[in-house]
Image (cartoon, rainbow, N blue to C red; front, side):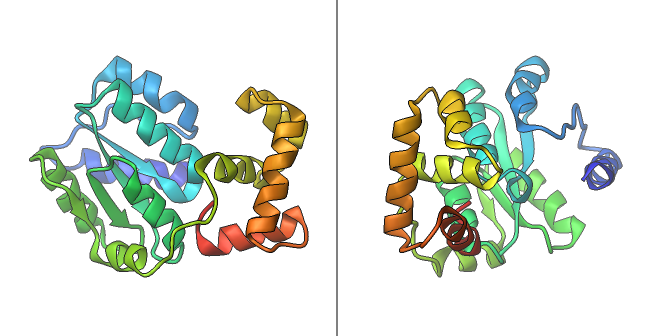
Amino acid sequence: MSLLRGALAALLSGEGDIEVVAGMATGDRVVPTAVRHQPDIAVLDVEQGGLDVLTTAQALHERLPECRVVVLATAQRPGLVRRALDVPVAGAVDKDAQPRRLLATIRQVAKGKRTIDPALAVAAIGVAGSPLTPRELTVLDLASGGASPTEIAQRLFLSRGTVCNYLSRVMTKLEARTRIDAIRIAAEAGWI
């Protein structure tokens, strides 16, 4: 991903009207870096960070409402696309699109317009919403990354029992036999 991030930064920097002020691999650095640099637009890849990126986009909107967010996503994960569009994003670009589409979207967003890639809009329209609550999705997303209930509890400032209850409700709602099955179902739907 470092190679792709570097290529994207080079593409954007090569445009006379676009200045890249930062690039990072982890979402936890996005908001503090944005506060320091005060960018007009932040480009976030939801495919790489899933729900964490959406949480970052929301936090960025709250801390720096003047910084507009453009997300990169794929139509193959329509649930995630739909969740991204529910967050206050100003633009969404299909990662399979030509680079000029990203450039055009950034320029439109800079003019104050909201621009959603047609392929992503169609994918988002065709998907039913997740039956899971945002907290259940967050817990399941952390579990999908290998975190134990104890680790999830510590990270979300919950009790271990509460996390286990969330995971149990997720499995019931998704009619999953195991936690791994629930993760698979949610990932295939694009919810995590």
